Image (cartoon, rainbow, N blue to C red):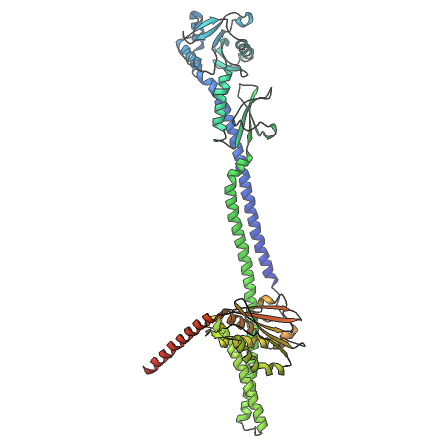
Length: 566
């Protein structure tokens, strides 16, 4: 009876598989977590990039007036009261600012002037003359900006600590309030109407395209939008439409452009795509390692089970062979002692003893031959001497020698031989062993329906030999193992049948050594059919092989003669 697999082995295999699956799952989770963190980090960096862009725009408006804060406002105020112009240092700064196309003009309104109230003259900077000159040609934007700045500075002036303050009338004008810190008073207002066409078309749109455009930053789409009237001012990628549902980032401009916002959508597909190659390569390596580890564990488990089963079969085989070897030896020893002691004086008894000794010697020799065949196969020393053989004629000869033996066992023999059958390259001794083993198996494993069919045929390039019986058959579970050494099908009949589990292993080895193939079909209780196929040879090949065999035999004969003479 087959021994059950020890539960501990199953437990250890299951524990190992669970551990590998668990570790693999943790690694996959870690990879996806790392990927999510990378995507989140990428999104955060985009937010910082948008904020930095807004600061850059702010700096663009402040840049022409950098250095204004280093002026002494009391001196500036006194100089203006005396000359109607600012000190030379401040005038140089204003001259440079007047050349910046982002501003339309530069106006100055003293704090005590009510020019905007009565639409009287304002001071406008003339770049040609490099001085402020009175003018009545100004738009309401100038006064609107100054009015907003005046209102805000009234609330700030008491605690304000700097000598100037920049304020914006949304996107229409920029105003610089000049502050006398000592007197905590406003000196006046520099007002610059913004050149919107230049600011949008020549500066903001190119800046957006350069910073966030499709070629430089395909993962981000940015729009400059007037939120009060839903107007898109500029876009980093005009081909992509603004959709409120897809906006992930909203950025205000610091202290200016009150009704303008930067809106951005992160192209997650692009961000994910950039991380996909790394994730995919890691998953492939991890998957390969997982398959390898699981496969290795299962392979080691199956191999251990097979080795254990083989060890058990070998152990049973040794016990069986030991018993089988002792039995004929004991019979031969007992018969020999009786003959040696002269106890047998009757001719009939003498013949009986001789027959016993002979049959047991044949049986012992058969067992030893099988053991030697297995040992040779394991050592790779199964020597064969193939030659063109007419299988049909050889089969007739085999049946003539064994027909009476088969009939004596009570078997019905059915034989089918074709009229013409090509020859095949075979070793005669191998063919005899194959036929003997298959026929003996059919005899041993047939119970009530004693039938043996031997059929020879040829198809295409093969000579096909079939041995059929109506015996006990072989279960589907056992079929893959019947050609393994020491394997015997476990059932009530095979337990009572003498055998070593070597016959079919020897048959398979000899068939393959002779270039053939063997297969079996079987149904429990219905019998089995063993099919052996050998490559057929043509007449031209037969003639060539015969010449090669003759040449080899001639060389061997010459060598033996030479050795003898020497």
